[in-house]
Length: 268
Image (tube, rainbow, N blue to C red):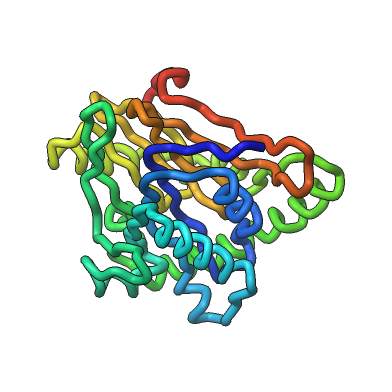
């Protein structure tokens, strides 16, 4: 598969240090995608899990080295910390090996529109106001996605593309769906307050592009459940890419792209 080049790539919620992270899928994705700018929209490193038990295999190093190599070759790489890698929030404006750290940014798209880019955890009441409860929820989430690991291994042996049971199950729970909807509304309101045309965030592991009362809401998804990224084309159009197969396991990777102009607006 040929390498695709974009103006900007937005990636979040990789959770390096978690056994559930689809690091091999991300490495394959980075192999086939280049960009003038890569924005890491938080939770790239999972400090919470690493504090509980250290897990850092070679492929985690490979992701870091891949990003550093892209930075050395001229790609601008911006790291916006999330709640799982919040230790980096103490270093705004710092450069690590050519990677810039920023609390949030205003992204100027090629078509002239402005997008507020932030991780989004500050709008999650559980994370913001009840840290202990958030840690307990994180542990329960770990247990839930263990099913994903087994299913992914079986599907790969059968030559089937990746599918997330945990992502599907989450959308069957009414409280989870209500939380996602409320999160989207609050984040869109934040973008409106800053005079932005849209917002690009992560945090809730639910990739989507939709219009919300005149604000374009874009969520990058994650590399634990959905294996998704957001790409900005040279004309300013955005594309949601789902990376469901790897070039090393199938002759043709399944990159399911949804360009902004092809996606019908959804109700909030």
